[in-house]
Image (cartoon, one colour):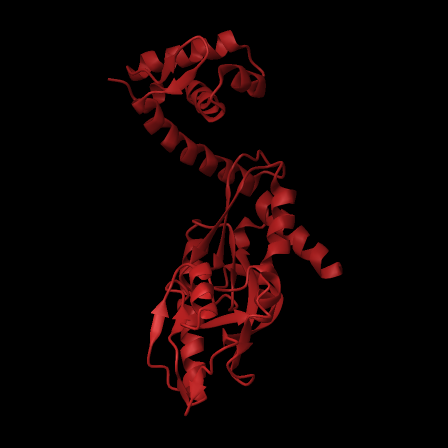
Length: 295
């Protein structure tokens, strides 16, 4: 019976590189070995595992079902391994994907320059993945668990293990079509569209309407922002947007405020885990933040 100690991890890494590049020649060039050496190491790994990892043909190299399964876990393992080394070494080995999270309903325009600058700065070291999160609590949990590298929020972190930087503030207003009167007798005449993922923002919005004594009988939870905008343009809904959204999306001529007094202010923070301060992903983030501050 083969044991973990019997596995040649160099061969495992060679497999990972070949599968990632989809080419023996490209992987050999990246690893600084010959294609013949690489091919021999892969064959040795297949003999140890008693499975075929690649389907070989003169012009094509494709993963078998077992190869695809192994690559899935190898990708996770090596990305995590790169992160482990990055937490202790002053020289980055790179190669891992940075995971960033952003509240789905907030204006992307405010964050787009930071994201673009970060992606450019981090490109030599790995790739960037951006996703949405449900709430601030979820963001903090995933940062502390190491599931995310950094993220955006409307709140300062509560955990002392998290570092943060204040980005700025934006006004969040509510709009309807130019051709309708959305409020009559302190009651909203159209459904209010909210994104189902934006728990923190939705709570603030509902508190705002309650504080202004405006009744909101119907709420539509719509994931697609474009669909929510289309409903608003067709006189079928009220939509919350920032002034930056209106300008960026070119909606100024088509939508109007339902009330200038009906607004909430959104704070924007960038948050990361303090223990990851030495990691190249966090270093590049802080460098980009410093550059934006001085510009």
